[in-house]
Amino acid sequence: MADETRAPLDVNQVIPVMIEQLASMAWQKMGLQPDMMTGQIHRDIEQARLAIDACAALCQSIESRLDAEDQRSLQNLVRDLRVNFVERSAGANS
Image 1 (tube, rainbow, N blue to C red):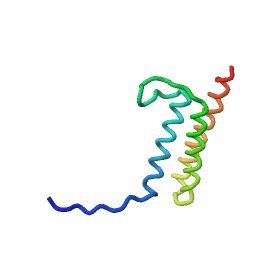
Image 2: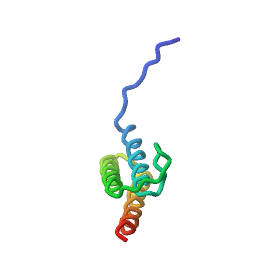
Image 3: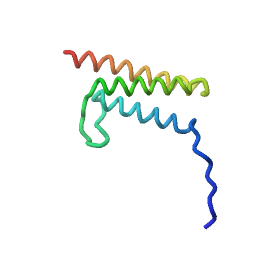
Image 4: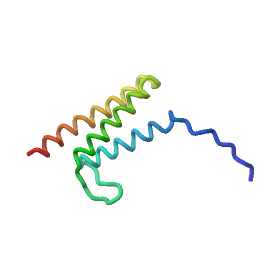
């Protein structure tokens, strides 16, 4: 077998993966998707808030490097997370 040359890992490729993972965790922590480890719904609003804030910060850090369509996609993702968070938070106080 030939020795395969690999390019070094690029942060610009890792950040979108991290954004997806944080968004997925936010949905899970809001109780809108089952936990990927247990398959159960576990709601933790404070963990959801942290995941959303971290996701938004990562989105903001790469936004200027993206085209308009990808920028809109990230903005829509963060908006959807925040809207759902507000709705789920209000339900937690009832």
